[in-house]
Image (cartoon, rainbow, N blue to C red; front, side, top):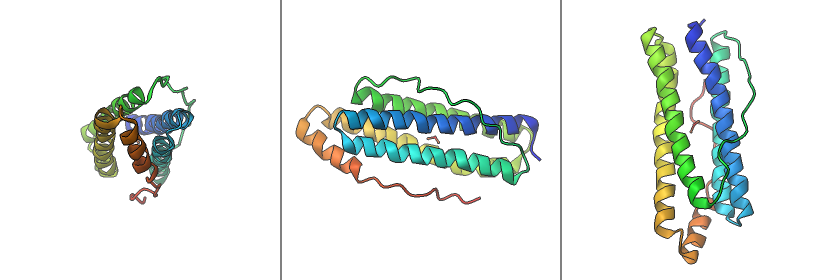
Length: 170
Ligand code: FEO
């Protein structure tokens, strides 16, 4: 059994991860509509990863004998206007998710819940990688997004991203 507050935060995170998947799926759909299939693919894979994150939080709760409570998933709060804002909003969202993970880590630390801290270690690292990926996308778009030939090549590069299951096994 876990601390009540920790269980609550972990359940909230299940919802946040599903929301992230929903948000990125919306970004993906927008990019496909723009004819940027590579960007669409990149966000579709990202949405799959976010769903995996939600499933890992569910599995962790279940492994600890806790009840999983699924709540309503909000409609994506960002209305994509153009590719540039999609990328910057994606980066902003990853910063937000990092703050959520750190908040749970902090709460686990305060009640000496070392097991949850160890579980979250993977997410702390994962968030670091996701922030870097999102930052790189913003930078690349700033450099090449305005030039149609370069954008075509960048779109092709992003189209090569393939989904792979998370490295964390519970
Ligand atoms: Fe699962 Fe990038 O948050």
